[in-house]
Length: 381
Image 1 (cartoon, rainbow, N blue to C red):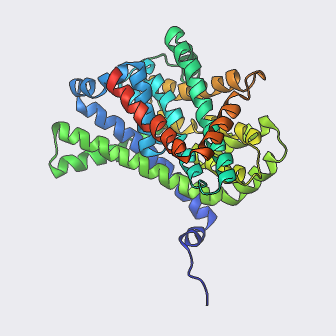
Image 2 (image 1 turned 120 degrees about the vertical axis):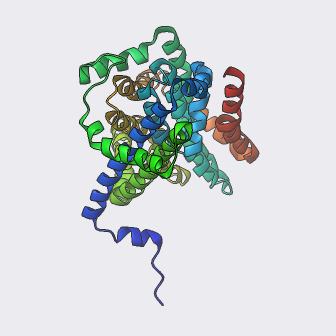
Image 3 (image 1 turned 30 degrees about the vertical axis):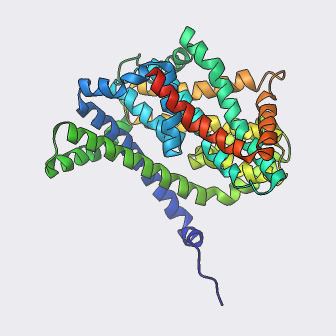
């Protein structure tokens, strides 16, 4: 008796060439979604914009909003794309958006931490899995703890990003540049607005509906890009991870994490691949750690794509802030040998606690990714 074909088998029946064309189409759809989101925010008017986003002017509130938004959509790519759209409209300044970007970096680690909880019944596996998941958490938290105060005091991250943006597009902060991608997506965005006006919507109802439509398109397109890219490269990814991590070379592992994440458009997928490998003891935590750092940099490609759809120098700047933050984090926390192992050792200690008290693991996830950000927003808004 032949087993029924699974959904994954059906997914693999699509020819590679056709799936590649589909991915290109979904990327275009993603860009349309970002531009639609930007259009909807502009339709809100300045008064409504200020009321909606006034709380993120506080950096701690902005950081917490970034964490919560990313936890909600389970994707830093989606949340940073939304932030890029907000900056493009001028609703949020680059300086106010920087903590939100940092929060998105922390929030994205919730996925692989939840994946690790699946190993809770096997104590040794769970200890290794939870440590492998939370090393990403600790790196991002340490990076924010160092770089957020530095940014608030000196503006160094946004200054570096603004300088790079100006060199790339030849336009200074607050200006626009002629992006061909913005022209490519203009007509579909106009069609979306025209459709909702034809339905009979107007004013803020129209604006909120266009914003919501843009969000749905962004989230849906990213999910489809991720799913299809994973099908295209799944086998190669697994072979590459096993081969490279066996060498124990940090720089090569970091490059692998970067490339895989750029391909699948999701750092969560890259880091989640490592959890079962570390849980089984196939890969050591120290060998897996650099892959997560490469994934942090690789995931910033989505925000850069989103910025291309806006034609705004500020939007490109905040997208580059994401990249700059992650690169500086690596330079500060991984390159110097004297504290390179700090996130690893912290994760190992937390893993040891979690295996003795599984409730503490659940409490950690709830506190770090939900309770503390909510409290932060409530206090600092």
